[in-house]
Image (cartoon, rainbow, N blue to C red; front, side):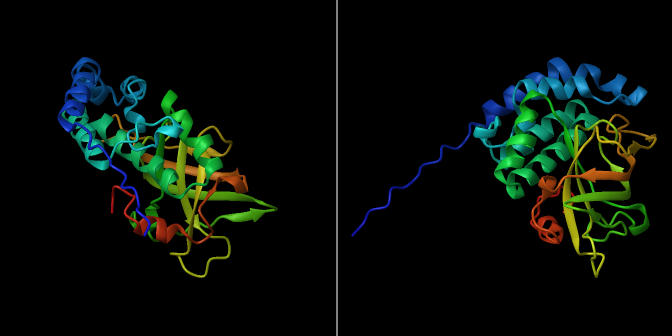
Length: 245
């Protein structure tokens, strides 16, 4: 009879983590909150402070430069950040959701290329909903096309948090040749690629999160930056990775 060794996972000290993140909030994030909201300023300095302490990679495995913590730790961080600056917290939550999607569905090459830079301050976000569908995550009108092994994105997205500010976007369109609007695929899009234009964001409150429209016009995506398999987008969304689900 064989004996299987039990792996013991030590639960994080949540109160200690709360004290840690609260210190960053009190020292760096909260003092900037009024200015960020009044001027609609993207909270990049706050995000850099979070990245320096490793919080931008709260769920990322340690081998990719993250802290490898759990969702309770993430929830504590989001709560404490929101107490200091709601705009920063919204950007943070969307960023963590985007990178966690890569951590769960990306291949090893994608994890190496997209997750490791987060430790140095790279910011990601979701860019999925479309105005014509009322923001419905499972329903897209845009459809990617193929050019050889590459994909070409032509899409107009609405309410993309960190629009025009993110270093990369987790973007969704209908799969090339899709028969239904819910046959969707995900792509990892470098924010510096040609053909990306962000719209104006103006709101009554939480004005620093830049949840505005964004256009992808003829944006070329290499096959290596397709996340998961073609048509897997519905599965990815239904997995509960998205903070909107």
